[in-house]
Image (cartoon, rainbow, N blue to C red; front, side, top):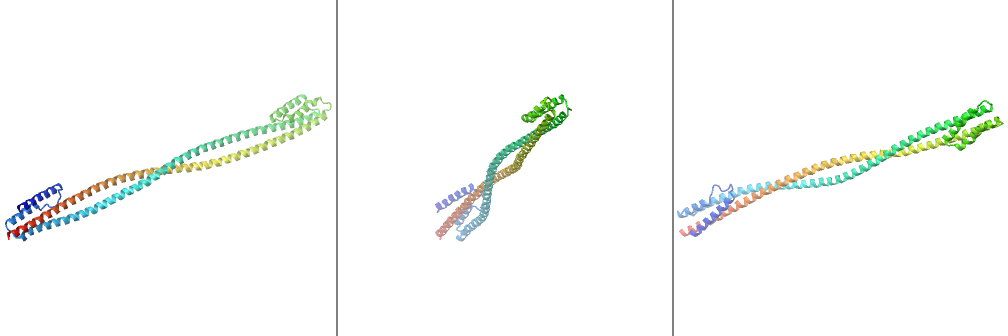
Length: 350
């Protein structure tokens, strides 16, 4: 019997050592060693078995009550832990989802922005080329208009010179013109021939005018000269009309070509405005999604840390609960052994 009780003491010391490794706020008002001493004293004093069992049952009740309270606390802690971990897990998953979407949008927007900027650059180059062509068309039209105006003056001067020659031929027929006038008029006609590039058409009239003073029949020669000059005048007028028609056609072609380029310029301006707006919107999207991605990253990091902390804390609750519960089980084992020893001692004393 002495050996059995010694074994119980060793177990009690072992249990006390285990409890010391997990210092908890339980069992502070009871001591298995004190119970063992009290039971030993009662056995020595031959106290009734019911008295000994009363002490042991009281200890068991205290252990059971304490375990029940601890169960309630642990279950509440576990519920809170499960809720917190589930919440943090959901927050991390939500952040991952947001981050995935934001990164997808960022990738797409970045690719689109590069393409849009490239297209915008090409559009601006084409627009500059079209604007240059419009400037060249305007310059060419201006030059052609100035050339036509100079040509108009030239043809008008030629017709005036021809009209003056007709008047001079009429005066010659009447003997009212001098050789000096003939020479001057010949010079004018030659200049007009060169200016209008109608040398061949002018040559016959110029030759007739130069020889009119050598003709015996000056009247007849003057009449023939008038006819030649009138024919020349008609030819010059036809040439002028043809020149004017060609200029009008050229101006029409210039206008048509310019209208085409202006329409292209308008389309390109609209395309440039659209592309600029699109690029600006994409840059705004990139800025927004970059902020969203950063916020999601921060949220994920923060909640992952809180998740890990909660998991560590909840694990410590589990370790605490298992350790203390194991200690109480060991106490009940010792109490049951004390109860069997007390019953055996009581039987021996009868």
